[in-house]
Amino acid sequence: MRIKVLTEGPLQADDPELVDYLRKNYLHLPNNLPYNLKEQKPVDLVYTQYKTANPSWIFINSILEDLFPGQLQIQPQIFSPTQSQSLMRFFPSQPQSPLQYFPSQPPSQQRGFFPSHPVTRPGFFPSEAQSEEGSFPSNPQSPEGVFPSPPQTARGFFIEAGALDGEYLSNTLQLELKQKWTGLLIEADQQSYNVLREKNRKTWTSPACLATQIYPHNVILSSFGRQGKNSNWLDRGAARIEKDPVWKGEGPGYKTFQHIQCFPTLTFLLALNVTKVNLFSLDVEGVEMDVLRAFPFDKITVDVWVIEHIKPNENQTIVSRSSQVTEESWKYEDAELVAFMEARNYYFFDMFCHPIPDYVFVNRDSEIFKRLGVPNHLRIRRGLCFHKANWEKDETEFILALHRDKRHYPRLRYKGR
Image 1 (cartoon, one colour):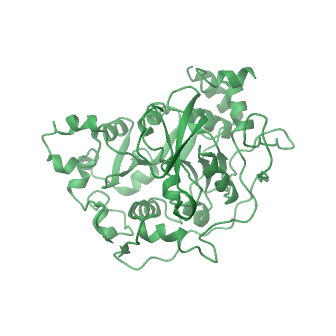
Image 2 (cartoon, helix red, strand yellow):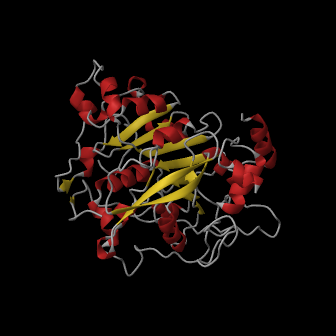
């Protein structure tokens, strides 16, 4: 129980006991049962309405299709035992009505179907099973006593933090289904996580949360919901870490609280023996900057980040000092986030200009960035929303091409063109 007490912080992210504790108690193996998805026949038309009614998902999905085309084979980078030990020694301590969706061209044929990769170990955990450490079952050890690494046949590795039920508005599901990627899904809300496990995703999953510090710690998570037929996954997606639990923040329906264990991102990746992430989707309802500040950019490589982030009010004074663009062009863009990512060698690829915006950043050292052929004078840029359409809440028609930024990737023929 000593390690359980220490997880309340502070404890080094690379502590071997901590890595082992996370692996045994908060990391569940990929599931080898058939998928159990709402988009499968018979299709749940109400649930899957987000594919035509949620403009931000349409926007992000179109970008990921372009950045990760089906024919591009990307192998996840995996720790060798020597690399893992070396790193550990080195490292310091639903909408009311559907939108009318008008793509600029007919949808292209699905690309990138590959033979299924073998799941390394069965990962099914009966719902009635209980862990000694909490309400979620622990992982059984493999016969060899070694926790499996991502299979070499996987064509890419993702992390989705704020995975909800593993299907609704998922930024990673299509990469898994169409291109046979694998990855890690993190969802701290217990009710959402239970449903996520029932989807039988071929990924690792965790009912913990990403730490907002460089050490593990506990947080209070607020969850929202409605009774009966009024309940929906948009409400569940509003769950957030409370910096001030006494504050009565806004949210849909009734509000409940949970105590949740958080682990540093590095601890998750050490537990999985992964050093490179091809796609990191970060949707953590307001603490994304804290997660990013705690992320070991100098040790872990991420090719593409997709980040939902609302510009805080205090940043208004920062953008108002800009002499290059008008205040209106900074309506949704957070200069602090963009500067933070640029300082860590990321290119501001695009963003969905909306009161709840999504940002896409591409690593300048990645093969993806090299394919883009971005001119040198456009590698540092601001004011994206000044040059393209903004999505306002009262709009009912979504034209994808108007919301994609066409200025900076001349070599990329993208879906919205």
